[in-house]
Image (cartoon, rainbow, N blue to C red; front, top):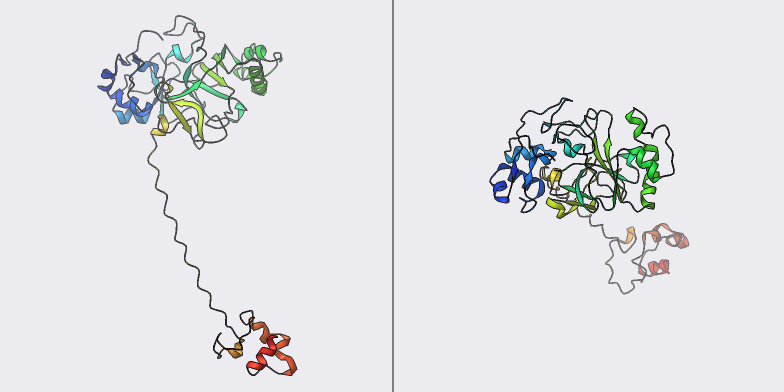
Length: 349
């Protein structure tokens, strides 16, 4: 990153940061006012959480959000590209060419060609669930999100076709060629699973693309591909919960993510510290008690005047379904109904 901060404040220690509204902003995003990692340059926070800026009372140096293609270094803007899918009403971006497009020479604020991010480091990322990710996860490098991915053993390329040629047995073909002037011909979407297989075969955890341009994007972006899980969902895995990612300042915390969001998220940080408190779960409706069933009579309907069950002639089966006796063949033995205790015993036997 160049030395010119383009009006964005720099903090040399924790005391200075705490004395500024930016201290509150960092606390909302990262869960703390950092005690390490100084100097902290807000120009390097290329993704900003707009609601946290407002809550903390931060007044950015560039108050007006730019929507123009011809943005300049240090400008704050709200779209990464027309139709890119990464325009959120809670996100602002800072155009920092040294971080956005580290492989591109000749842009304002850049003087040398940066060769990607180093292996074995945690880096802040932004991801939106996408079915075309397949079994891998695609990120944009985005300092300021408070969400971190591990690069592991990483390898750097300029664009997708170069990696396909290097890591697979595929030859250049329509839909995956660096010779084409159409950005769509450099996506190589149909060969992504081959790319992931080639990465695994060579022990590569992530690859970076420093000079890839998406249709509708204002500028090139640093892409990161991770093969440790599927990016078809926001959390880079099929289920919500604990993830392989980290959160907070310096990747100091675990990341519990929810797939019901359309972007990667970690409980208590960034976007997950913006949401309002959910409404309490209503108390369950009381279950009415089951009505007490009417006790079954001991005797047939025509004998309900008899005491029950203390008569000395009480038959052990008298508590059975005695109504059946009334309606069954035994009740009509001899062409008559039982008329007393002796006849009733006979009917039961």
